[in-house]
Each structure stands twice: as structure tokens, then as C-alpha cells.
Image (cartoon, rainbow, N blue to C red; front, side, top):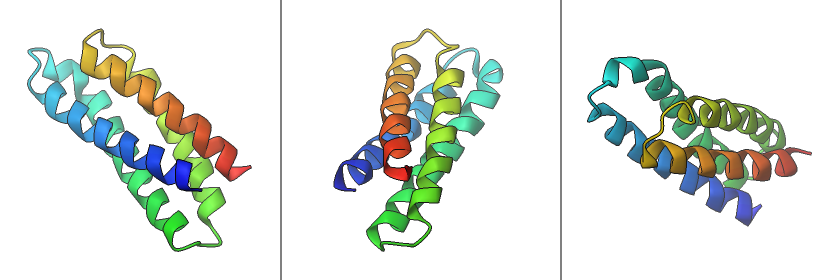
Length: 104
């Protein structure tokens, strides 16, 4: 569980940093869906941390949903070639994998 908590925190941070960077890009209008997805991903990751930290009976189910959202966020970020989006996508995929394992 500790590994899952750590990667969820790392993913939430990556998403927040990516949002900030995306807002500075000249094509910010093309990134609206991506920014919304990043926001959802950051939130679900932090919620998952809370569920795991308090040993909630719903932690595993929550981690499954987190994995799905992280995966979707990675797909969205990969549409943009800049370094921050590519790095964020990589971290989202790592998080999705760990969350899937946690949820099974």
C-alpha cells in the first residue's frame, strides 16, 4: 500500500505541474480537455491516498477507478509533444499500473 500511496502523490504532483505548464502554452485552447483530465487525475489520486491512509473498505475499488482515470489522463497528455505532458503521461501510466495491482 505504501508504494501505491507514494505513486499517487507523485502523480497528483505531476498533474498539477502539468496543468500549470499547459496554461502557459500558446495553444492553451487546444488543451482544455487535457487540463480538465489532469485536474480529475490529480483529485482522484489524492482521494485514493486518503482512502488508503485510513484503510477504508472502499480503498481497493477507489484505486481501480483511479487507475482508469490515470490511464485516460496519460492518453490525453500523450497527444501533446512537450516534455511536461510526456513526463506526466509516463507517471500517470506508472500510477495506473500500481493502482490496478492495489485494487486486485
